[in-house]
Image (cartoon, rainbow, N blue to C red; front, side, top):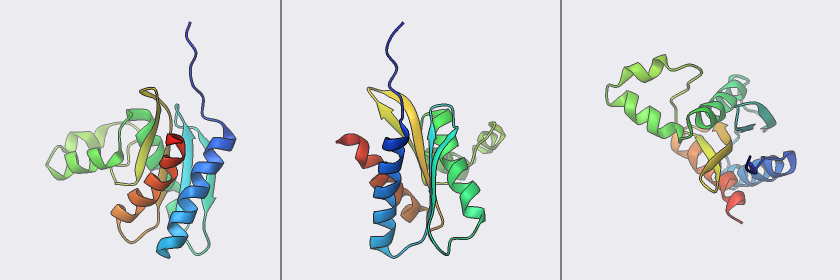
Length: 135
């Protein structure tokens, strides 16, 4: 049996904090969810004045990225190109803003962001959180 990298609570908090900082810099209030490789919530940060529905959206974006091992933007693009069968995948939210966290090519979790006016901003904020794992 090999060693499997694990996403810790401390690492999830650091990623969420970096995403929060990016959101504050842009003047955007969002919700940030970080999940483990099974899509289970590890950490959630909901900034002030974010619509309550964005909590579920952030978690679902993170779960989608973790469970399928790819950025949710890829699924959003596929659906936009007419591949609507992707909408039948279990537990999927094909909206940009969910990114898998990879260590040595293995998914150890994901980060999801929701609440910005555009999914591009959600993704940029998620990338700021993801960048903490490159250090």
